Image 1: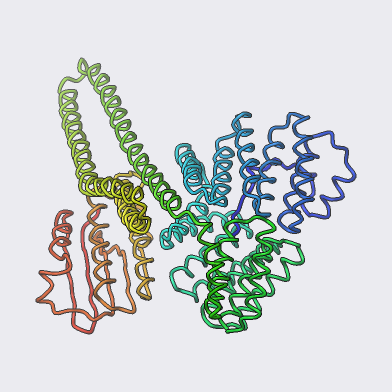
Image 2: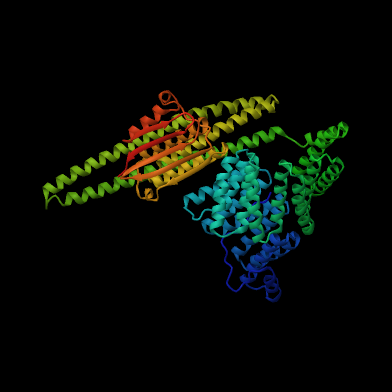
Length: 630
């Protein structure tokens, strides 16, 4: 699995060439006495890694760049050399050296007091290295430190690798729907930067998520686009990885000839580059294709070749996978003695208790980050309230000075200001009560449940009952995910940046899209462009979102529709939110007691609007929320 590890902002001068051949000539014909030479070496090493996969030569060039940069006290050159070395070690499957290089890069960035964006990028790179080494707790911690820094300093555009890394971690935690959202954000950032290499990686990872969700057609479409971008980036190594994943999906679809062709193309690239790690992956996947076709002799040959290469590299995760694969193969061949030998070897490499504890700790870190983010929002609200109060006091002082000139006007102004202040205080108090109520209802009980389940998990682990403990951990995952979603909704509701109807519409679209996909519903979403000019209060925003969310949930659960539409329309200063489907409908007289209609109607009335539901059996349902806007 490839992940993007790129250096920070470039300081490459205009006279340094860009192409691989031109850089080769440049470093051969120039004297290594200035920073330009260091920059050229870094560019050359990075290109040799990505386009040639000649990892040993790239390593030698990058060490030379670091040595010259150190002699010149060129901090940026030292940082880039270590970052590029980390990328080189990452792609050549040397996780420990990857970690060492990227830790050193972060230390250099901090010691030389680099800009905040570079330090945040160095943290993201380190998170990717930890994830490659299967150290998910440290990986999540590094990613979240980077994300906090980007949010604290409002760095724009955001680092695409941070979102990509979080997405892949969520995928590893069996949350592909959530992962796709982060990976799509990473793709959009790469697309804006016209980075085909990064676009290819994001598309490949999205394809893997759809593969996990059992949607092979979508997975193949993303792999096809990813390979096109990998060709544009001239990265044979990435093309090889994409071909392997294409072959895996085709194998699931029983399209064995196509699967074998794709994997053999990947193997040809791996052999050309003498990339033993990739060759091992290709051999094993080719063996599995032959196993599906009952050609056990070829399957055994290729799987053993894969295991031999993994043993040569001491790649423990691959050794465990390939050993299990051979055990399953011999079981299918009815050679139970050999199957037992390989299964026993596989079991000796697994520590399920450690895996359970690691996954639980990763979830704890994500929950902690969400809580910290919520606390930061509350702190910001308090600071804004203090600033408003100070501003009010300054205005009052100015008014007092004008009393001698116009007493009646001053008294009237003071009365208006006091009334405005009282209204603001009431609004602040209501906001605090709303936040406290939401936190208590949405988060408090679930956290208590997680605490109890965690204690029970510890007892199960101490009793050597890892399977039961795993079930508890899965429940903790589910509860923690609910907390994340609830806290995210609370934060979104109180964020002043979301005070527009257009933002409400986008939020509902993000919520509805994955739900519609799970039911294979052809979903269309339209928003009147003029809505972005209309701010709305927190109460209106919250109620509109919850009405839309309830309507979408009902549509997905009960309608059995194949088509659905959500529209935000502006008609004569009236906002209409329309949710329609072509589903089975229902009898109008029965709707009062089902599907949360009473709750939706109360919310519509709370914002001065109305709710109208029209439905006919077998002819679909149409829900319209109407309210006035200023």
